[in-house]
Image (cartoon, rainbow, N blue to C red):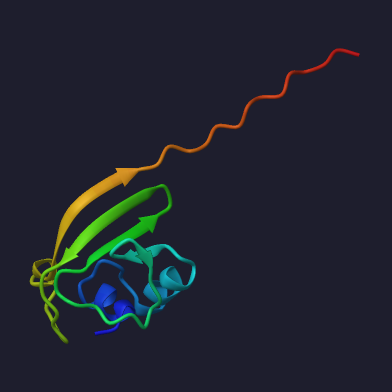
Length: 97
């Protein structure tokens, strides 16, 4: 199954077009490498999705063409979540004239 479709079916990302854009803008990695929307997802793959400053890692457990909302979370397990701290810009000193 295509990566963008898997992200939508598993409800990791709500819309397939958004999943496709996330892949195109390099916010999605599979097994530590940037992945295109057309990547063929397999059980055991580790998917990392970056949402703003937060990155969440998922392990693919199952692939289903159709699933209910209640069963969607059984398609993956969350294996990690990390928050990136924003880079603080040094404040410029005000010079007196």
